[in-house]
Length: 157
Length: 88
Image (tube, rainbow over all chains, first blue to last red; front, side, top):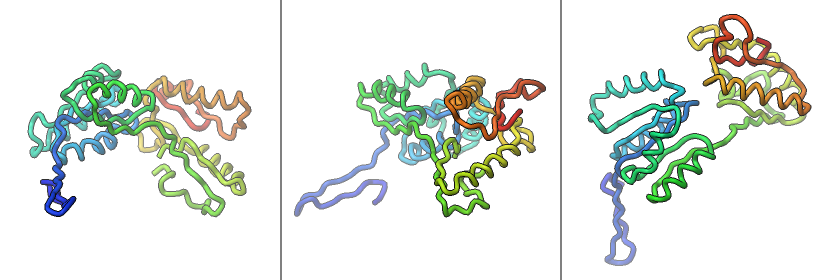
């Protein structure tokens, strides 16, 4: 597959073409418990697809946000205006993004309750959503576990 | 991974609980800037109170305490948003 899409022959002499096009402005809402990784996880595919981005960074991680913005500002290959970030404690700015017909895609990582509210509000414009909600990351320890060694993903470092 | 829930196969429950308890006793909560800290602060005071309340509720409902932590009451660390996993 190329960046121009692909064509398949659906019947003799008939071709269907898939075109991959940027959606436009992607709205990304990052959570405070992992603002860098969980923001970039949505940012990278949006930029790779050719979208511009408006990102809401959590107000509880203001210093992390500021550092992240400094790093983004150093990226010379990123044209001005492609990446736009703001930070806030509550949801006023995010609500503008979700209610705007100019932001066709929303990526949200956070609570199930907020995710429900976001998808309900965005339904008006038939938005596309990437929602990662809830979850309690249980760790299972079976009786054949080697208890002299912590498992790599649950130990502290 | 937060490790907020650990489900252990019953035959090894006692061993895992004892080892985990011993390790928790040695964990030092402190400023993120201090290399001697094992865990840094919670995100805000509400989170400190919320998590401590969850532990309190569990105890009230019959949970057996192995290691009881809590917020720092005195000293410079009491000004932070730290929740120690062992007696602060």
